[in-house]
Image 1: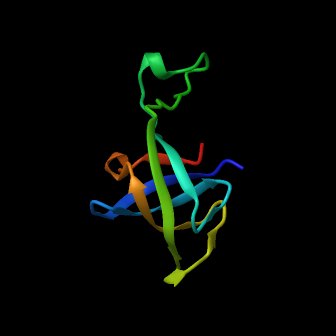
Image 2: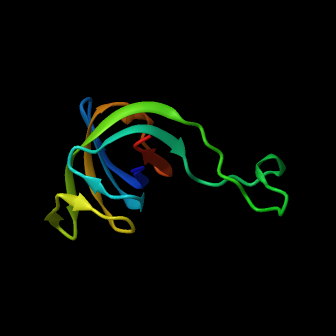
Length: 109
């Protein structure tokens, strides 16, 4: 099952881990979930990014990462799972944390 998480805020970053706030867009996130891709999720307005109806289309700039969920916090509690539609804080560890910023969509692949 595909899982995606929209980063709304980077709370902290070090060489080995990244702490982010955001929302689960698709699927559910559990401890050990590995995000393998990240792409820009904000919509840009230009004629080259609009479809035939004039609606904006997301501009994806995917990057390969390998970030594993080490901790999930929501409503001041540690949780084993964060379901679709919920917001929370994730502690991620692995490679690619430098790509993580506001508006990035993390995906399992």
